[in-house]
Length: 223
Image 1 (cartoon, rainbow, N blue to C red):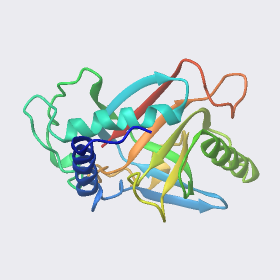
Image 2: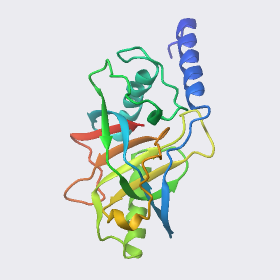
Image 3: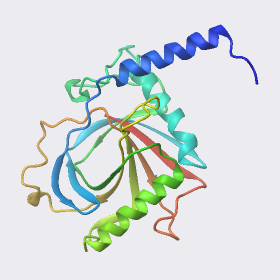
Image 4: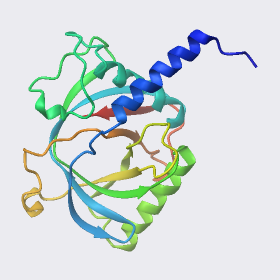
């Protein structure tokens, strides 16, 4: 096995130091809980602006790190005015997020989002995500709440840096189409999103719970 040079070690230490600083006190994305049911809960995320990137590849596992690295470079100052953005600061406080100098990074305004969410711990891989998504799907069916739920797409949310070993927080979401009037004010524009990394994937047409392994489009969003 090749021995790592002192320079490489210093670079790795610097990267880890930056990651620890960035993740040290990151706020979770605010949301409103509409109702809690067995195995999942319904949430409302207000309309917000997200910094996004996309990448295609054979598996989720192979894409998460390079996609996150793009976003981390963006908030670390790789944008047109070279502004460093603290991950603990709600992006909503920036009236206009700085344009990205990377053509693979784009800023998008997304509408109010209502999701059915299942939470789990540990490290994620494609098999774990598929298992948790299947459990969420079954819980929704058991509660008779599948009407209006879009099972063709799902989100995977990760809240922790890779060096956190215990107490990790992960989630899988599916989107529910609802009448906004019944949300009882949950879509207030004063609520900001910050500090959650979200990944969106498409499911295969032939199997509602089949992971796309070829020509899949993956997206990571950071608010």
